[in-house]
Image (cartoon, rainbow, N blue to C red; front, side, top):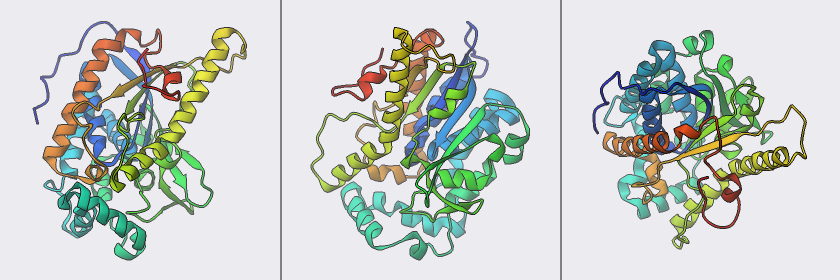
Length: 356
């Protein structure tokens, strides 16, 4: 992986305020790390609020903690340190390594065989039986790299962390003042791998089931009308899946994008009513949407790769995300604050998704 670019390369032209939406996707969250690194180095985008789910929630919390400690450069350093430490060849505690090995068995066996094993195991075993001590290797790394007290006590971007209430099937959004390790762990608690995380007496699973990520918390923002979505789960795939593993992967992508598409539709509908004069209620605003995609160079990755945790793989994803972030800034920075660069209606219509 290349080293960080030199400090002091801030580009001129003023700053623009955005709300930042970060998707989940397991190890693919390293793509988001790359995008954030490009944004933080550039410094022209000021983040007013962050919505994050699963790996997106982890990145959001690391970002907030790093900003508290040292501004943009502190955030860049914090993100890099976290992902380095998360790697299996990093500093995962010995007490957790057995669970890590279990989680990573699929990709060690190869994509096809590993996916079959993952599915077979998922159908007959529960995290309550295979992981009776409820060891989650992510928790130790999260607690080591996130200063939760600083986030709760200091000013910074608003945080909207999504988790799914297991009992009610409803989404819960945790704010900056609520942030603690259990909140981050709940947002990233895939039920096939980890037990539900109890918060305030209620059990929670991964927030991706109902918001990946949730956009509606931004609707109450009165001064920022631009949302930048960092999307790591593709909506459109041209190839029809044929193998059992590919079919499952595509089905999961569709399921985890469903809530996002619903919000796209709502935003587009309200914006259309405002544009035509049919909706004049001042409580409603037209939202400008932007999207950063980093699929180039990693579109061949299968679902098992979401459980990879080695530094070289993280580096590949980081570079893809960094390139996507730089590309977004070069092509769309001038439009931020002026117009949308992401065609929302095309996202839920038949056919390829278009940029505006």
